[in-house]
Length: 386
Image 1 (tube, rainbow, N blue to C red):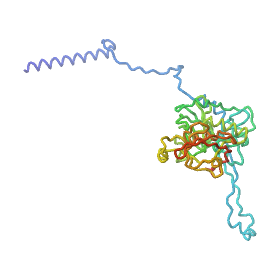
Image 2 (cartoon, one colour):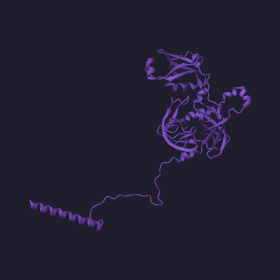
Image 3 (cartoon, rainbow, N blue to C red):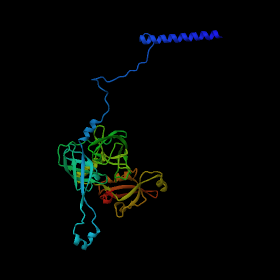
Image 4 (cartoon, rainbow, N blue to C red):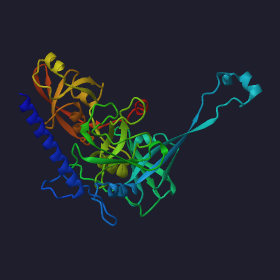
């Protein structure tokens, strides 16, 4: 047994000595032994070489920056006077010393040049009730602007400046925008100067947000902050796809949920404001709401298509035609209604004075009524402030 262990130990020792000798030879004469090593190859850009191109939106940004302006507005307000000033005895001794002093309130926004001769698009809330509007062009030149008209129902306003040879933005095809497309938001957030942020189109056709009467927003996660209102939302080619309008935020800063008015709405409203100074829409004097599954069940109907008449204005067009609260509108001029927003859009597109055919459901019975469309009245002042 000892003989076997002695032989095994001699063999192991011999193998170790041979391996050690081979390693020593390999270090002394690299490549002498017939085996291959794994090689780590590090590739570096040599002096004078070129790195691979990285995707950039610099061209789109540069194209749109020349069409985006900063808007400064101011208005004079007076602080409430002291109740003592209503006392003639008090005024006899102190005169107007306690009269209110005017204060200037300024605000900041953005705008988009849409014509060479000085038409500019912005938001209604940017220029609302302003006594003075000043526009800072991309080259730093400041000019006075005149309000051509505004539309509180869509939060769109058109300004005019006395300048020529401006750089108008190119309007994108409204039918080509898709969810997931890259977009850039251009404006003047917090007054720091022209800024470009990037994101994607998160959703299209957003409504029922309680922002405007007519809502069809583009939702994006491109950073939109105070001062960006009225600025441009452009595609990767620098073409205008929307007007930055609002954000969802609990802190006042960007949370990645911003909303822009699409170019399709901008074109329609802008054209009417430039031509007529305001937007003319059809109106029948009803308050409507969507049909939820619970409402459909309570009315014993199978579909949630259509719009429920929740209220009818007394002596309004609908009231005069016999429409009642509780009726369900199904179609306008033989075009089906999907929801309350669809009804609002279809009625508003009908010129005032024309007659419209409404198909409605009343207590499981279908009715067809003709209603003479009136002009939609201006938005009440208290609603405009909201």
